[in-house]
Image 1 (tube, one colour):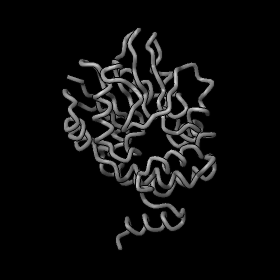
Image 2: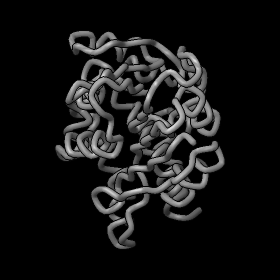
Image 3: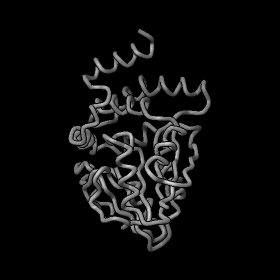
Length: 243
């Protein structure tokens, strides 16, 4: 067994979690229900405060104008939705975890419970779709990407903000060690359900790199696909257009 395999095995046995929870929507939603109470503060701590900048960059990449309607999928407590709503944009928070939506009930944006693979919206009903740090938790990401295209008007935009692969190899190694060791330990101190962050660390490690995700967007019918790295590739913004 390699060191990497041993680390993964140790984490699974210590946390009592499957590596991916089989991505069953009800099971993943229940996991997010359990972390909802301290989700925002945990994200800020684990990201070293970078999460606010990532949200601003996502809004800028979307480029929505006043009066347009955008859907924020996997919106969680709607912190990201509030950011998207700046400047008169009508931003709607959508999440399959009702616990998350309740935790963000005080935020003044429309909210709807819904699954990324079966959105409760009509065809071509929004000007843009954003999903931040949620696509990797969907049971079938390709089906979700096609669903995002279904609800987006021609000429509309998709932005996927997701953890990715650091471009500098020495830092990539350090980052992997942080994910598998430091992240769950920090979560032990600040999260309302630290076990969930073992799963989240594994889901980040298993996620496709920038080029592979761009290929998947193209395969789902999005055109003019491009990406921009944030924080050295720890996060990547992928953007596509609905032809």
